[in-house]
Length: 373
Length: 252
Image (tube, helix red, strand yellow):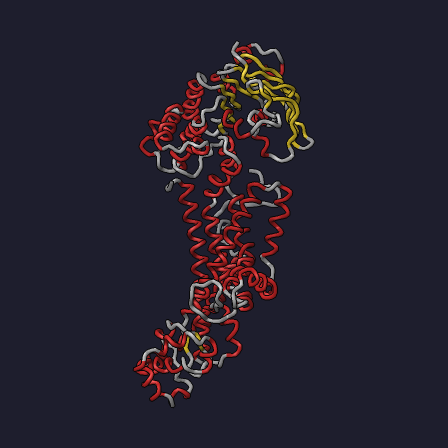
């Protein structure tokens, strides 16, 4: 028998095959796992903190069911308050219409000055007015939701077609050198500070659209929506472009070899093959608009109004937090409601992203395993 | 000798500064199978792709010389590539069905050519699939995804898809290289049938396949056409020593 040569004097025996503890291996594995879990934990903790601050809303509801009625009555009273009438005089009529409540309001008049009785309940959160700092605060989230949805819709109506067509152009039609310029340029726009876009919307776009359409309120959902579209276009563009270029070249070739034009190929082959990616791009764009604060704050006018007119001011959920959090009384109902809005925003964007992720994965897997036509 | 369908005159092709094809002149007769053989990178696939201008898609390609299809130079500025490709169909090395149903795949070509009549489309799909010998296997699942077919079935479906636009010439770029022997045999059988109606040009790595299916064989080496002639002659008594060496397996 010859001795094993070189550094590897490995002898095959029970002893040498025994499991060894390798410290560096162990440590690096644990550290990486730890870091991964840390980032998840931080996100979860943030959510719990935000959610925790909004809990008192739900607790007070149980404690003071009796008071709920009072609150509602107070709400009626509040509509007469100076703050509310200043904001929008017309709307007050509808609310104060019920005479029977009016009389009750008068009885309760003295109580209304007392602070702390302004409880936000599930019912009052569904209210149609957002007047958190009036003498008789109301925390109706409906106008905020309507405002956010309106803005998102307007932004998507602009951003999605433009971004998708731009992506289609650079993926399927643009010459190589042009694509090399366009793609990085638009991607750079994704890092554009939203405050700059907001400023631009506030100073330039608002006046431009006002001259164009001739409406009254300079800042409104339309201006805000278009400005948001500017912020969302780079995101939608980038992801759509990636999805389009990921479509195998063999597809394009197959189509062209059948005598399809470039346009037909792009429309009937490339675009359908990339639908999951495009869908994800749109969802992420919606997520961006939904959570966008600065542009909303600067360009939408921030009046919480409910209506379908796109040229009315709106107030979004995110902008509400941005505008009011700094001035709110710590621990106040208003404070809690703002945190509730934060939780809602978190839940919404989270589910949107999750939907994008799972939809794309599921769809792609199905497609390429041939389970679906 | 049958009529000449495709004729190339001093065709050279450059990828940037690199010459990939060196002055190739070749006559491809109508309704026969012409095979291109040669080692990898010898330019046979490149040459095949010049015949329906698929190389247009690759940037930095420069082509000199002429390719005449039915006497017309397809590199003429007046020629519409889209219509050219309707006449010169192509089947690729890797089967590339669209992620659609079998029916949609085959109907795609006729549809983009403006045929919208449902009945007519169904008819075309059926004939094409029958001509590609796959109708019996898929007739009950026309509306299932084409991705669910086996590799060999996918390739025959791709041939059916190419047939659906009624080309006159079919270019095949190693159509059976990724298939098992049984699927390959089916494809070869199919080629044999198709040559009754179509002019077929096939690139293959498999010399036995060239010997089995083709009437004419061209041997390419390093971008040059070394020898071109009747398959029987090339495989038994080639003129050039190079050809003989390749065919007997001494290199390549």
